[in-house]
Length: 320
Image (cartoon, rainbow, N blue to C red; front, top):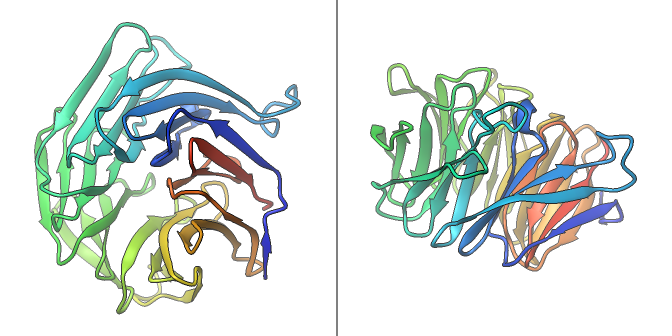
């Protein structure tokens, strides 16, 4: 069952079209959001009435803006980010349209640094910072590689892939494993101690454009292949346990809700359509068309999904 979105929808105005958006997933900084565009990154705070009963409405405040120099294609927050203690620290890593990674660190005063990582020879589709200590950064690219880096920009490992790398993810409950999803439909898990693959999931024939590893359940992996979403239970089988049509043309992104393993969002074509799926009821309570595709991200503790749009970030509140 699908319905055009009639749920509460909020938004954040931006200076340029949004190319990626990421809520900070960590408890000490869960009110932060990063919004990437064609030349800059906006950092702001989001406070919702659901988490502050003294508020009558959603509040957004800009914290800082960083010049990027090219289009921001992907972004990942570091667990070292915190505004609750001194010295304050904001740290995140981006993937740019110039094939480079950039690690930004700021105290929101005068100490701002940007480290540039060179190595990829084609577009970087996703970047992910290890979520416990933040010492390692992983990236996947159209150059058929997954690479890991230290905080100084030194390449630590290179994994050759059989097709373009589309998604990469760590898990906070199992930080020595890395999930890597390839466009050809293969999802591999690597043991980072041995730097070797230890498990493979098979999406079958088709074009896999995005995969995500649920933070609520480390055994649960989701992906979008062609126009379908697929779900695996890694304790059960290398084959998907459930799949269903998501979009009539193709699906570009999938993201698990961080506060519930029953919810996930997909973004695809036609019409840059975002859908939020509730697995317990097998319903799509939210379906909404957007002007452009600018990525999707869930709040760390609330069932609120952000989607990038044309000079705007749309915020959708789902029911658990």
